[in-house]
Length: 131
Image (cartoon, rainbow, N blue to C red; front, side, top):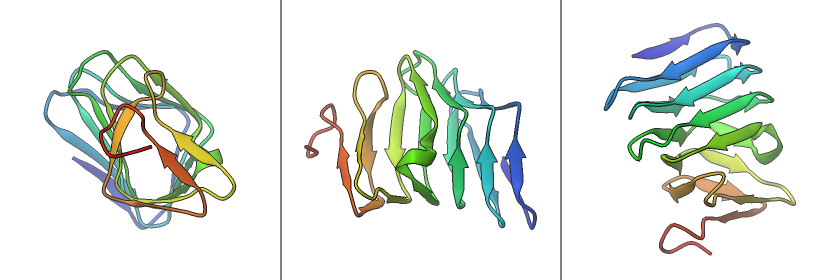
């Protein structure tokens, strides 16, 4: 399922990828702002594929298959709060990380990267190949 369109999207409630193995993609053409909760639970996959920011919460439950793909374009300060009990966080887009370090760990999520980080560092001590 994809949430998209020509207009910007502002979430003040809950966007939930909650069906095991299925992907919910958020990709409006004019950007996405989260001030509520976005989550991947019960093995669901949440993919962000636009310019986006969050002052809200990103939640992953204890299910090892629950996944958030941080795609599109975003900044470290615009990640909001990551509330993680399990699951995977993948950097698949472009993180503008000026004078900052994005650390994914046991609290914020172990992760992989097929995207890129500009002007800063990406650390995932739980993922092989990252330091």
